[in-house]
Length: 176
Image (cartoon, one colour):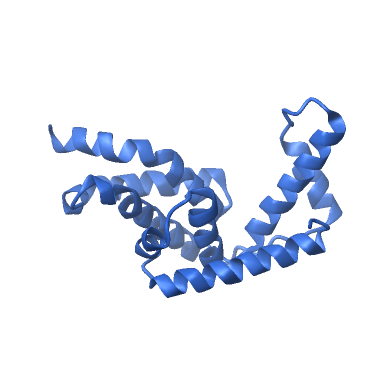
């Protein structure tokens, strides 16, 4: 099997996970696509350095993470905190339709989703990174530490602080 075919078989299945991480870190779908594309090019260039396919997910997500933080560094002027106001809620709620047939249930579920997403967006990129990798992607602490290039203890403390910040934000917004 050629290196190009091995790359396709190993990395292409990870593109959805990579885009999800990039979208949460960059808070912009177009910028996330650019970062994943840049990361895929880097990964292809350095594919020979991958020791085994079992390590492919943390290896590739580490490259995606680096591409995202490089993009964030280029955009230093961008505000990193989303303000929670009623106009913002209304605008976010109107952006995507709900698939739940009961309007009251749909409204409650959509509002909760918007509150959680907005609270996640308000976290700093390092906090958002660990929470997304752990809670949304289901990665273990070791893989998160590898991706972020930090010790496992730092992963655990960031997760704890990120969860506390999310809990505080959601309780202020009226969620239990």
